[in-house]
Length: 344
Image (tube, rainbow, N blue to C red; front, side, top):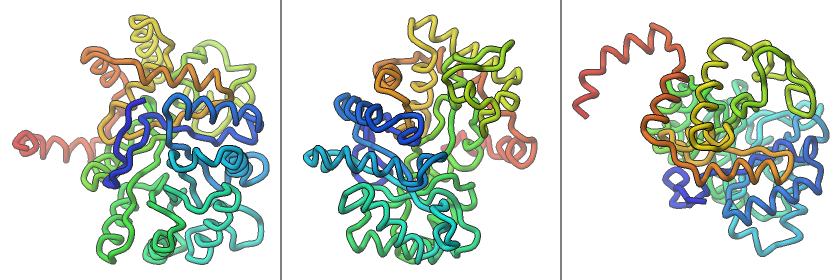
């Protein structure tokens, strides 16, 4: 796999990252180990997890599986960029969540223990915490960087104003500045292009998207005329979260799916590879996160690294997946600045 810079760090990461939310739930320890082995053997180096993974089951199981895998082959640690997150609730004690100084430090110690490592390469705030001043959150992250327990910090699931405020506050206080944003981003969900992508480009933050296949919709596995069944995310739970069948079973979705399948037929590859290649080539994107239940699924998706979309194919996918931009403020203000932008 090709390598790309992670923000302004000078650190190179593979153009596809490995997401491990499935570990401990959809992928048992044996399957997870095979996925990890195949990923690094294919040239991947960015492994992402979180203290609350898997979302259903014992908290921290994903980190523990990765930690045992690293423990069995300690020589690999230095070549891996290991990322995890804090913010979610770990238990019912009342203070085991959020982005307070107290919890961030405790959460980091817990992740280090479960991952069986002395440091985390990229430590991320999983979501904004309205109960804690961002100054306190950033000071806590900075203390971990200065202590050598964390190399860089990032954020996930922030809005545009939250990300801008976080970056400017860190800069003004001389604290560690986030180097990456981990948002949902795919052809079905491009709304981050209205504000978050411009903030990332302005401050040179890398985008590490989750949900690159729209939770399976862009892989071509679902059909217009039948609710999903069988061993897929929606087959097991059709009402699951953002990807719920009733939520995404709309005409726009099927237009995009049809366009992806048409390009895939031209290239003679599965639709998932086309969707992944399109996303990996978007401005600001460093490494889409690939989740997998098994090594075979990962192997197939990683072949997107060998794919090239021509200008016509990219343009067709851009057009069919363009989000419905609200008239105000985005459309009106974009039209009002178009002439000036052409001067840049």
